[in-house]
Length: 397
Picture 1: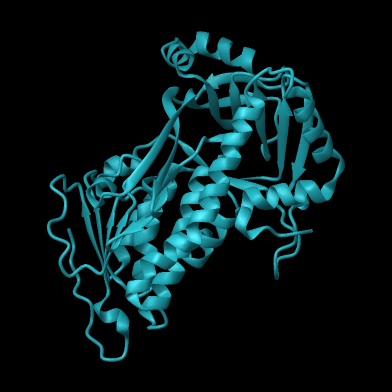
Picture 2: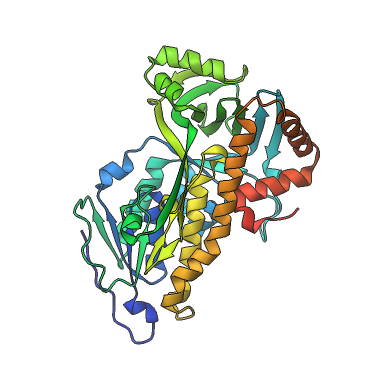
């Protein structure tokens, strides 16, 4: 634990602003860092020690909205050696045998940036978390309380509490904020493998009757797989020996993609649609999976969480400079975030319902949607912009 008292000043309203962040995963750590750099004195609490926070075998698909947040916090350059950009996304309906290609050039031009080169980036958890912990240690206005299972005491003197402690969120429950939870019949299995048949800068989103299947490049011939299917089937796959698992995997992938070697152990877990409402109550705001959780189709989960952080960062900076009264910050945050969250949850749920089946009545609709995407560049541009920037920040070609 480290405590640095904030410097006294008569000019800056931020001198008396204190925030407490619960949860030091990628979203909570970014939130604490963003608020500290906005002039707040911040406490960051998590029952897990740093070593446990680092040990997680997974990768994240980052879109341009997340890249903008990392750039604003001066983290993007340090992460460059660990980023695997993908410039092509293949969307395949395996039941219809139809395919649409999205290219980085399909994204609308960004102010001052010209045409985008990458559709997105894949980033492993460990280098991201290592950088965040390093940057948190450097912040003079930030106290780390990692590995403290007892948790904080009274919130007296804390101006804002931020619950970023995951979808089970003890702080959300303590605040009495309602939480809507709807399990999917599908689960999700993640594993890293070596594949042949795909370019190192190419990602895949496969729509299969049992659920979506994402193939995400990690660099060279390594790929992160995110396999959705009925949870009991995934649990059976998780228990297989490596050779048997690779055989089952080969049967699920398109013929041109051939799995050769497992790089880690498959892990299966349930998937659900979660939404807490309201997003704030009595000085507590919800960020990330404490507020929402979507199906992993389209890789929207972490990016939606980090757009929460970006909005909170902007409002925290305005409050610190005296341009926004503290009492208005929680309500303003909730007002700015609800629509983006609602649209992403609805869109991901609709994709799963539309494509994870063999319903004869839905097949013509799917065929038409893919045909239109393949034909019209502007439609691919709008779709990519909604995925990359969020549906509330569409960039038109």
